[in-house]
Amino acid sequence: MTKQERALICVQRLQQRYPDAVCSLQAQDAFQLLVATRLSAQCTDERVNLVTPGLFARFPTPQEMAKATYAQIEELIRSCGLYKTKAKSLVDMANVLCDKYNGQVPNTLEELITLPGIGRKTANLIMGDIYRQSGAVVADTHLIRITGRIGLVNSKDPYKVELQLRKLLPPDASNDFCHRVVHFGREICSARAPQCAACPLADVCRKIGVK
Image (cartoon, rainbow, N blue to C red; front, top):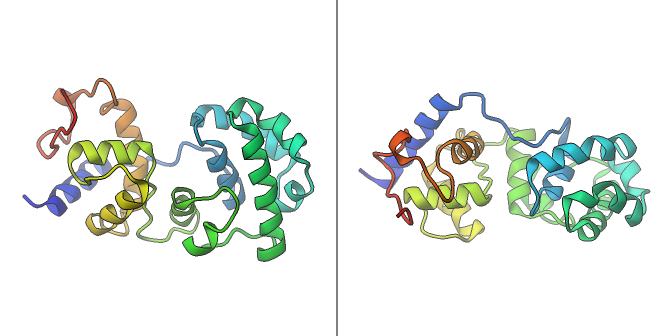
């Protein structure tokens, strides 16, 4: 069985198990998802979802956030960790959106990764979840760990993982596959204690790194 055939089986089985899997970050539009994803760095999605309602109530748009001081944002996002760095990038990002994109979130990877604090992972999430573009691969820690364990990728570098999976996954299924992997990782394929006996992918998984 080829690696691509195993990848297709993974896509199909996770689709059956998690048909309604979506991003666990709560957001109403592209700007909110952009902000929430930036806050999620080295922070749980659950914590971000507790913080963002207050943040968006105060600064709901790029135009409003661009007027904020770093200190105002810091106070609202302090519990997310790295709050000084994140506050600066959020205000700076909002200013770029207003100055360069008329307050709109761009829809290309090339433009998105020029925004302060935004890398390829977030750019792919915006392209896939908001703009429904095919081929988006969100190379977060779950995806890197699990696709490496299965044996679909041979790197832990997010960029290399993204490129390798782009060659294996059907473009129209790749974004949802990334969300399903997160749910799969939390339910079955945990980092320390994977439940291999109950795993729907057991017969196609190489169990790399599993003792």
